[in-house]
Length: 63
Image (cartoon, rainbow, N blue to C red; front, side):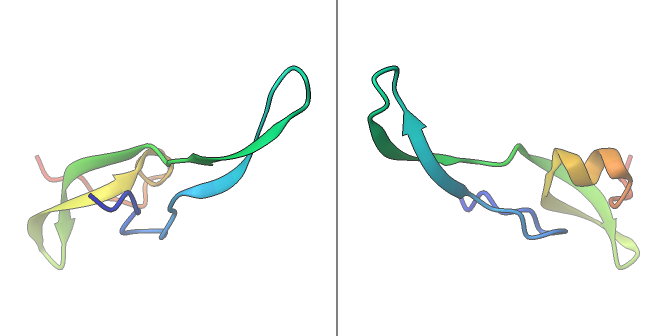
């Protein structure tokens, strides 16, 4: 499953995991993606949306 928001396009970001002894290794952060039923072009559709877009009101939920 591609963990990408269909509204803003937010996806996985990468950086360093730093241990106590300051050794670095690569790691990734995934966005908090939810499957929601939303109104898209006047009809209800299931889309993958990050919680930031849900909280900001960019998505109209279908009930």
